[in-house]
Length: 357
Image (cartoon, rainbow, N blue to C red; front, side, top):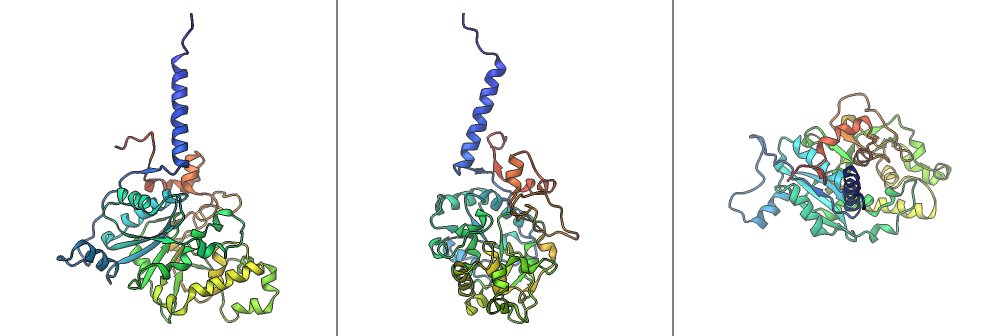
């Protein structure tokens, strides 16, 4: 007589099937996210709307309101989980969360189309003010040179150079955030950074970094190229957290200036990293420095191995997992870095094993 397999054998197979299902769902982009809590303005927040407007008028008046705080991010399949956590962190720590307007740039050729992304955002953040902007990848794909990490070569990684072309003209400034950040302070404090003397951009800058290492010997040995930084006192800054004056960007045609350096890079290898060096070439030495608390960067480790890193000394307003290692991937692999525990509370992913309805 055939002997049935022991009960624990069935449990083992069931667990294996559930794990396979979860893995394939994540790989196929079928990630499900919980609904976030709703956050409300404090009593002294100005209103963005006029009471007797219809819904279409309301949306237009909100995006063009002088009281709105504008945040721009990219959305894609690879980093959607990070983006959802970043959005939650911005809202949770804002004094006027209902005054925040998100501008999400998406790939026009993405496997996740606009309606799917809109549904994903709306289901987790039903009350969020946001627009989606399809970004034509082909516009920049021909300008991209291969870099030291393939993720840096994604066309959407260059969308930050095109924000002024995508976002409505009535929006005068925006905070750009990478998808691998957590904000633990009021984003309005960063948004209101003064930009004096016709400055276009503000960001934390790091003048102790070896600036020369961001460009090749070919660049530095060519006087017509290295003269770019004469009288500028250039410092490294990370483009994952920036305050941008969109009016001044448009007036100065800065997208074209960045593209010109990318076109040169296609002919002469002048740098190794992806979208950062063109920003440095155009802006380094001419930005408004922001307190380092607004970009505790490098928590993803270096671009090669992604080893764990500690926080820089000083207060923290924003945590940034720039580098190869991402907190959600390390947590899923059960190999987190200590600081990944600071990201985990903002994770909205709904797993097959969670008890959320």
